[in-house]
Image 1 (cartoon, chains in turn purple, red):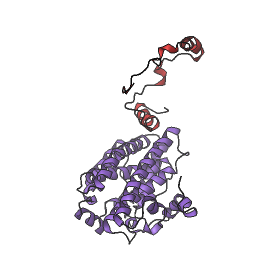
Image 2 (cartoon, each protein chain N blue to C red):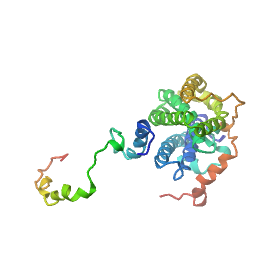
Image 3 (cartoon, one colour):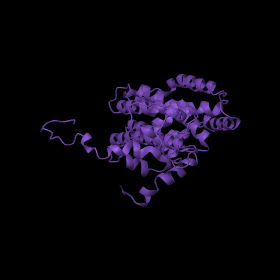
Length: 253
Length: 69
């Protein structure tokens, strides 16, 4: 975690980093997806997420008040200063693994933004309200694909199960609360993520049942992304994402 | 769209054709159900309109202050 950030700025940065890193990950599919239509679906979701990141990172920089804008935060921080959850930095794998990640994350984000759209803070609430419309569609899209792949062919089912197994150990981190969350709630900006868990479980289980898939077995959760302890994957994501600004600082269109 | 069923086609259509705010609604139907004109008949069907430019209402002077026309 970027220790220089005050709590509310850190809270905004976490939201922005989640969207930014997942957006970057989905962007990797551009030109490589199984079909042209799916290529567009994934790119659309990526662009929605990068739009959210622009808003939340811009807000983080504004709250920090040190002159950093969204681009500065996105392109000029190093791995340990990123506070995204570990789930979003996981590799794309095959299409099913990408869908598994999206399914778990978008259903969480939809529940989170439903609540955040109603907080008192007039900076966080409007971003969440706008993003909610996007995220509801992401959740629907990902859930549909989980059903199609899970209740599809032997091959697609095997891949969907493997994808969910990969991603499942990173789901618990979504709901972990700490001092930054508490400070955000005390300031009328935050959401009690732990309280979203039951509704998330219900949504996930309903889709898994329709997809004829068993819920993956509970495993020791892996956490640490919120405080900058990342997997080996994030550095590689950043090396691609940040290359241009590192090589040509301040370059723009 | 290439899609396995109507629901997937609707999602693909949304992602493909409404990205630049072109759409307010979507209809999906199987391509086998579309009755289309034969491109070979294009001349007979559409060429006769080419010299009838008066069908465009562009020969009228619009009074000042009239908008949305």
